[in-house]
Length: 216
Ligand code: DX5
Ligand code: ZN
Image (tube, rainbow, N blue to C red; front, side, top):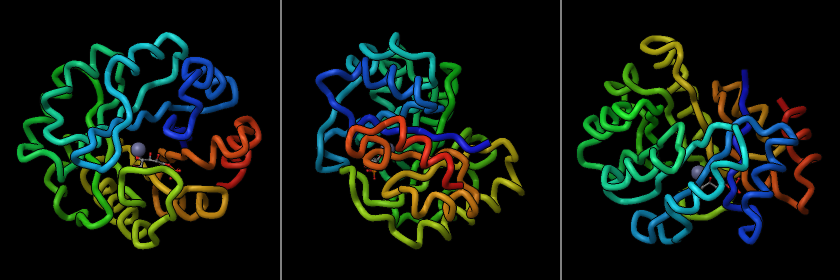
């Protein structure tokens, strides 16, 4: 089962609730929420109050991608705001194992994201305890960037680890995914596909989601 997770980073922020309703109506499976702090990444987006404000507009799971330093400081806020999956960056937390367990203690799913330059082997020991691994296929911080080709090999590496240590592991890919490369990332083993610009392009959400779904 391949899931499409539109990133609202490319949505119209003046009507986010409505945009989230539209995504659900047109076949999105998960809502991907990109939280940026201006420290871990150069950009600043939004925090828990915005996540909370759109929670009631959809029943879809909220996948909160925390691109913030020391994410453990804000886990509880995002749980209370309605997160179903919380993703923290390997590079942003000195005590990643502890924070994974902390996230899980709230009964939500825990995921670790890897920047393009971070090897998959760094998280081998964490795989049995994770619900999802996120392979970044762009350097995080901005939508609309080009897919980095070596991310495909990293997806394959995670897939191999999941076959060995965690059959239920979700494998998410994020950055530069469109109708041209979605088939490739799925064939490498990704099963949660984040797409921002490819979903909101020309404000044609319905057609864009259905083309992405026809692409794999
Ligand atoms: C990048 C974000 C992505 C991004 C995806 O830092 O994590 O979720 O918004 O956008 P596109 O699909 O435009 O690359
Ligand atoms: Zn993201």
